[in-house]
Length: 483
Ligand SMILES: [Zn+2]
Image 1 (cartoon, rainbow, N blue to C red):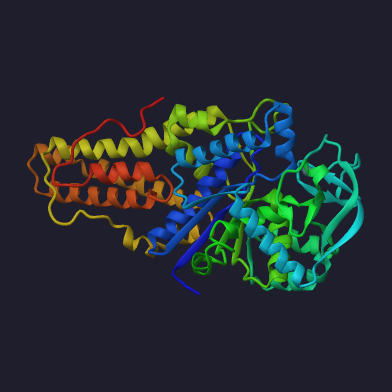
Image 2: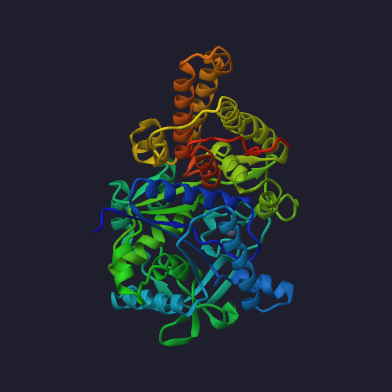
């Protein structure tokens, strides 16, 4: 296996509605990890995509009185646009309705079938369309509703389906997770997956009738009366997007994934179902799974009924993408639910970006300009040695984005203090020779800060790098105008 490659996947969102701020959180987390690995000189592939075969999409289209095709085309474009506007440097955006993805998923099915793990039976169960999942009664609340979607009734489904022998893989998956052969971060999510396995793994339905699927989705190979269960094909986007069954060379190069980035609500699919499908198909397993939490808005869960869904595209339009990236990565904990409010967002924008970082950059540029400072020597990029800053690189490797950014802001504060102490304006007035070294040290520090910011705020980092390149440094308009 190529040790110098890093294949990272963003979770594949349902596209039944337009993206909300939780999707933005996941995009920027994945992108930051990917950029960090690129900085370390690895060859990186970041995959994003759209889960287009869910029944939810069919229902949403019915409500809007448009075709499912129109709905997924429109909404997938919004997700792709969000990723681009957030400066997410993805390499592949794989859509679940593409023909190539359909073919690839049929290949995965056939491999599991050949291994004797798919069989047909009559079945009755309780289905949550929100989760796209059959639940056991003991997993529901006292009203018989799923924990992710309280207030929504489950649908009782009775039909003949194809089943996957999940029970067969109980011991195998348990061993894989316990031994950290697949590393799940954080630890409490690993334990959650293990406790789910402990209760026992029943075989799962992996298809539905054309009638229930409204004829939308990936057809079951050799049976035109059934469509695949959406999670069977959706997980395979991680493979179809890198050429599984269409580009052998590309697939061999990138698979297995080094990291799946997911939200806590879809842990079971990734830590259990996905592993079982891959084991059954005799394909390699992913290396690790990072599980992030959710965003609340003004302390409340985001919901259409409450009308508090935050549209990240509007925020980007109003404030730019890098302030949003900063808020999500620094002020939303990667391992606990975090809160967003516009007031807090604006407060942090002014304090950390307009004052903290922006003010420092403007200050040093002005000092250089006023004292006619001319840079000598190599003022090239310094990112090469950044991985040696352990406090910073350890934090990113452990997905503690907030800690890595705290480290950078400590550097910003330290440089501010250095300038206050050295008073370069006095040195200039007194024609003190030390002025040169004070400015040169400040510029070095700024270049290092820019390089450290690159995985987090790529656009900001680039602006700073450009401003402090070349012999003469000039003042420019503020990086983050005060609100
Ligand atoms: Zn649910």
